Image (tube, rainbow, N blue to C red; front, side, top):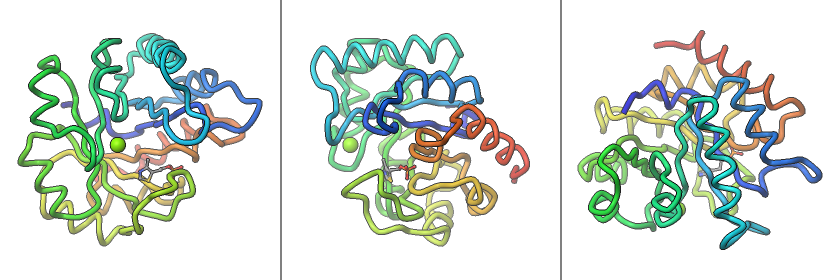
Length: 216
Ligand code: TZP
Ligand code: MG
C-alpha cells in the first residue's frame, strides 16, 4: 500500500460525534480538511445495526469516493465485501488475515491492531499491509482500551517490524504529532480530536499541516 495514505487517518462512527451533530457532515468536513484515509467504525453504545448500518456505510463510502480517499471498514468483513470497500481493519480478536485474504479482492488493504512487539511481528508475518499501533496515550473513546504504550512502546514496535507501515492510535492530539512521527509512525489515526472538534474541517487541516512539518 501507499504509506502516505496513513498520514491523517480518520476513524468515525455515529456515536463519536456530539449530540445534535450530523455524522455525515463531520466526515465531509474532515475530508475537506485533508484526511488521507477513512475507517468506518460503527460499534459501542447506540451503534447502528443491520440495514441502518449498511446505509450509513454506503453514504460514508460515497463521500470518501467524492474526495478520492480510501474507505475501510472496521471488523465487519461481510459489510466491507457487500459494499465494495477498499479494505478492512481488524483487531486481535477478529478474523485472521489469512482467512480474510482467501475471500477478499486482491487489492484490499488489510490493517491489524497491535499493542506490543509480538502482535506487531505476527501481523507482519501474516501479511498485514499496515499495523495500527496503540493506544499510545489514554483515551475515553474506546471503553476496553489497553494500557497506553507511549512513544517508547511505539519505538520498540518500529524496531521490531522494520519498514512495515505504522499508524498510531489512542488519545492523539495536535501536540503529539511531531513526537509520534519522530518515534517511527508513518501517520496518526484519530477519532475524537476531529470528530468532537468545534470545527472538524479546520482541525483536520491543522493536523495535516503539523504532519507536513514533522517529516522524518
Ligand atoms: N483503538 C485503540 S484506542 C482507540 C481505538 C479505536 C480509540 C481512539 O480514539 P481517540 O478519540 O482518537 O482517542
Ligand atoms: Mg475489532
